[in-house]
Length: 470
Image (cartoon, rainbow, N blue to C red; front, side, top):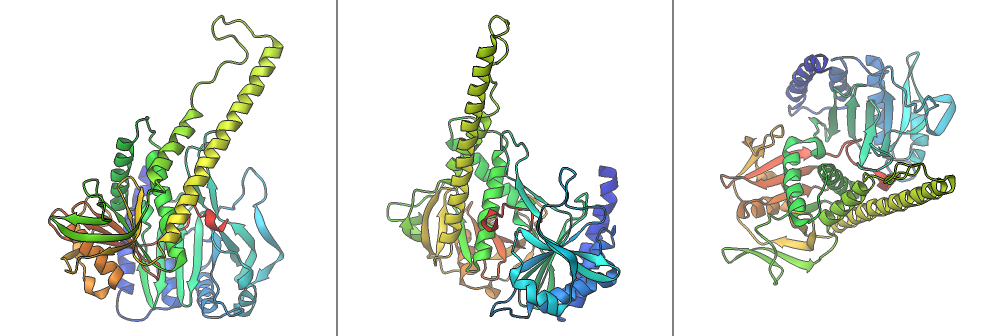
């Protein structure tokens, strides 16, 4: 498998460079250029149920629809084209259609415009493919599946995404596309915004963000007396990605500061370094403590793994139990199992409720402040530093903070500049900044005193739980 994947990865890197080179000029790009960029990826090992001409027509159709209001609103939905050889069928059954069109609807600008307001948003999509050189819609289907890797224990928050093309209409003239072949060896995401085509990276999948999750995990483990499983890292990544995804959806922007363990707020709700005030928080909090909730969820899930008593044989004598005792033990075991499952479900629900509350709170002016184990310490924070530090661009493919290029912070607004100023003064500081147009950037304090900035990131389909829309 690895030997088969290696050539594809090599070709993928070449295509990424070609896209960056060809479409990074100052010339304005449109749907034609966007389709060309998508086709470059598909040509590595063709997997889409679309001809080259069909792909151009679909992208052009989506672009035109994005510019047309329906009932005073611009459309916002997803279009899904399955990968060749794949249909979203589970357990040898028909696909789980939310809506099935019989016969299929032939799509043109007028038809899609009229039905666009009735297409639900993520995790659902309009299911289409090309038939006899015509783009047809077959229905509405859920393309992301929030599930567990182990249905008995619900150990993981696991999000599966169907392979193929997911074309997202975000705003007028703004399209996002995610491409996954059937083996998921070609994962690429591109965006067309303001006449520019850019490659997009998901924070949840970035090595540099994973290293930050590792630091958070270590802090959570150090703060908990009980033993925690290896699932902790997955919980952290999914719930933080979920928060950022919600912040993007709110379209307000936000700033999430994670303080190093050596620096916490004082009684005056300020963070001071060398007697200089760096941060002032207007409102302090003690909950939610996401790290503690994650640890509790992990421990409850682990309780499902503990060895159960035998119900057909006496564990001490090896003798077979009477039939009545077997029946009683079985019922008791089922009851205990259901009770534990309910507790685990409650822990999941509490964690997701807290994440939603945190994400919504980020829309208030000012920053949210967390400690390194993700306990919310306060909101409506204000950075008091006024000097801009030297900023550099981070290499997103490395776990360590290495410079890739220069970064002109003067091209950005107050939210980004204050994040850079804070990180310049606080060793170990980490800040995630969400802009109003949905870009996510990471700010870190580097060993040389400079501020490293990574991004832009975007939450992609299949990267984080999207149950807010389910």
